[in-house]
Image (tube, rainbow, N blue to C red; front, side, top):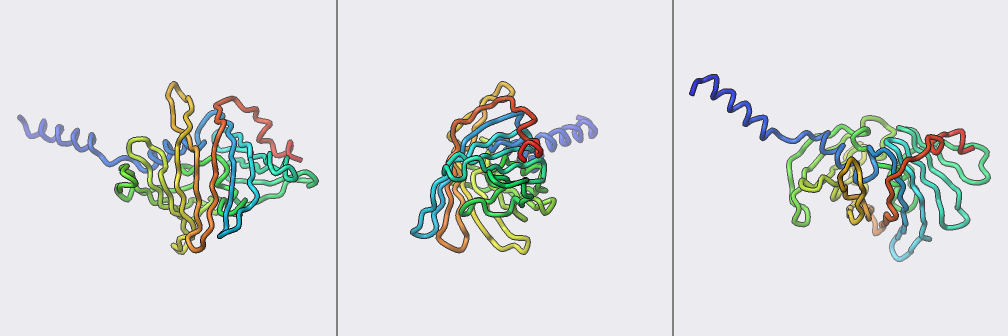
Amino acid sequence: MTILFRALLLLFAANAYAAPDAHSILKDSDQARGGGLPGIVWEIRLQSRDGERNDEPQRILVKAVDDSSVAETQEPVRFKGSKILQVERNMWMTRPGLSKPIPISPRQRMSGQASNGDIAATNYAGDYDAELAGTENVDGEECHVLNLAAKHKRATYDKIRYWVSVKRVVGIKAEFYSVSGKLLKTASFQYGNTIEHDGRRIPFISRMTIRDALIDAETVMEFGTVKVKKIAASEFDLGQMQ
């Protein structure tokens, strides 16, 4: 065996066992939360608790295509018709009675512990730089650990530590930090839904639980009636919201 042939074998082995690419892991995991898909509709039932007090439950209908999404409140009835529109990294809110949409930040709280950005389609691959920090076991499942740093101020959080299942390539849990490194909130994710995309069955989020890091408060978001379907571009037209 020549020295050159041995070198080629070693190079091939090194490439075969190269560390997984953090950005690719993040991009693939986004699909299970509505990101990077040609068109999808789902419903969120949202319930927030602060100590012993339970807030009024909400029901929201979300439509998303790639990095655009619109979330419309269905319940409670007095807020019916209120909408949050996201187009790329911009976000607006409108409700019946307003003369024009109001620019808002994904970081503003929508309800309880859920920020506006939490109810939109997830595009972590577009909003964050990802760095692989190894692997850890979460509830018996091996996970990639990703450190995410926001690329811009329109991202929902400054920093995220994100655990993505090695086998299923879905986010299992997350920790959300301020730019100074202070832990703000934690989240866990469940995937009881499935969708069809590119001839594959993909797990889709069914439950997200967000907890405050300092006080006894949490928000539970239940995702149901998930459908992959074509959505008209007019749904994401800011002018149509007025």
